[in-house]
Amino acid sequence: MSPVSCPPTRQVLRKKGLAATLLLVTLTGLFQSCATLSENECEIADWWLVGQKDGSEGLPIAHLEEHREACTEYGVTPDHDAYAKGHRSGLAVYCTRFTGYKVGRSGQPYHGICDGSLAEAFESGLRRGRMIRTLETEAWNIQQRRKSLKDKIGRTEHERKTLQEKLAADESIPQDRESMAEKIVELGQELKVLKQEYEDSAKTQADAVARFDEAVELARDDGYADEGELLGGTRRIIRSLRDALD
Image 1 (cartoon, helix red, strand yellow):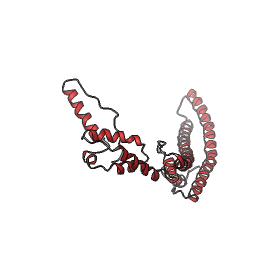
Image 2: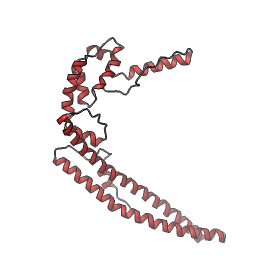
Image 3: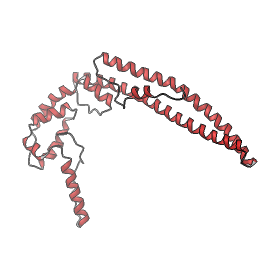
Image 4: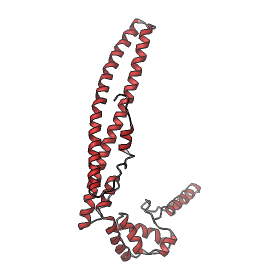
């Protein structure tokens, strides 16, 4: 009974011909495969349990309409009242500060389904999780920028060295030699700027990682479970890389 993203409406093909027939068969298979509930699930459904499951997973009560669409095909009508009561029970499980933190930390969508004191608790965790995710993303982006800079430094140094070797070999005409000499100077200046930017980014990166680490530790102190690796192990990757220019 996992939620599946299905097309919102069904279109009836009125065109005749083999192509239209094949398309109709394809669409029919698509709608059958993406239904939220199967025929058997519709027939034996305990609508309180279905609602409880959906609520505990953070799905809005409007999700019942997708179940209704799936089950109408089999002549089954969902019990709205039972579903609504189960959904409220599920929200009590979902709408906690810990789930809010997990949702914010992982970047999952929040459908605004919690209300009252439940909303206050959930959203406090949500804000905390989103804040830490932002810090982690910042550290990750800096690392990616440093990798890009390092690659560019390597390419520029290679190009400069190649030109220097060619100029030293004295195999070109005077006009080309002058152009190469100018390019070598230009590349040298570019390298100076790139290396300075790379050096400066080391401190920026260290500051970003420190702020991220501190935020994660504070979250742990407040009872939130966090391994700090929801963006692909940012801290582990950052700390394991040893840049040649450092």
